[in-house]
Length: 364
Ligand code: AMP
Ligand code: MG
Image 1 (cartoon, rainbow, N blue to C red):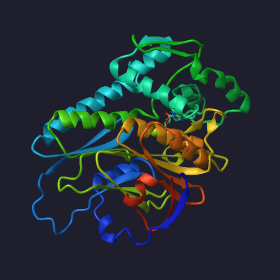
Image 2 (tube, protein in one colour):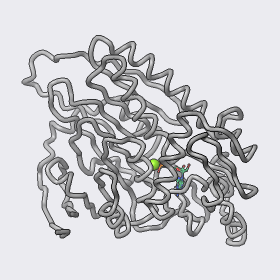
Image 3 (cartoon, protein in one colour):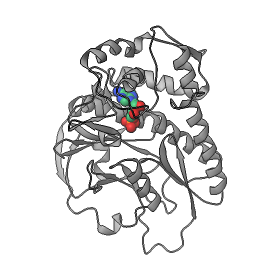
């Protein structure tokens, strides 16, 4: 039976748990956004010999500061392969590159997708259906209207928005699954995988690491975290979710293994005009920054691609709809929702592995 249960989680986050957040993860979060999920290292003082040593690398790609960490003797080789993969996906998916597959598709209005873009297209179309249009890759012409891709921001008029909205109708995108052929059936259509690409990338890094014989790894792509296995000592990874404000305080910690922890929030990218803040996650229904009453959405899932897509979509959908979509979804994922008034709710799969000094409403 679906019911709501209020629980209090007082004082469960000990100071020692929060000490020693990885420096690179911290700096990525600071440069990239005000509030994101970051890794916390909980190295027990009692643990004697670490079973495997980690190696880490900082990378700037996809407009994002990233840190990738792998454990064990194959770590360096895995990081090399991981870095190559990140750059490959960046070149394929970047709307900022003149030669990326996505840019060429947007220019020509048709094309045949490569394996990676096919996968992203299919995941995006499924998410569009599942989220009743809240996740929409055809949002790109509106992103451009608001000036997000070029950072030449402006607040468009209602008439301008109304004139662009029709080309963001994803039903005009004709996709042939077998051949990977795409045709835009309306002039002016353009797509952007920005709401899902980092999750796909972190997911893909897990595969690369496994192929390279790594069993324990953690990647942080601008605050979007994905983990491979447990920590080498068999315990959970602790991933902190920060408050969506200027303080950078930690809101809660989720314990995960073999999962992605991906957060969306308006604070990640925004501009201000006449005292009003306009952020980068648009509601496809209005063509304006989503104003759903949520300040951040974190998705925990074994599938990084799904986690990323849903984090964006649920931010647009708002709490009530997000919970409805979570209940009815065929996908396996959990959520942490933070509302404008600071209240936090989490889905029941996280009940025994979310630690916080704040009150958390558990939703089932
Ligand atoms: P994220 O940080 O994963 O929530 O992704 C935000 C990015 O997704 C934006 O910068 C846009 O590139 C893109 N985006 C914005 N609104 C939407 C939307 N409603 N559906 C899909 N992608 C979106
Ligand atoms: Mg996303």
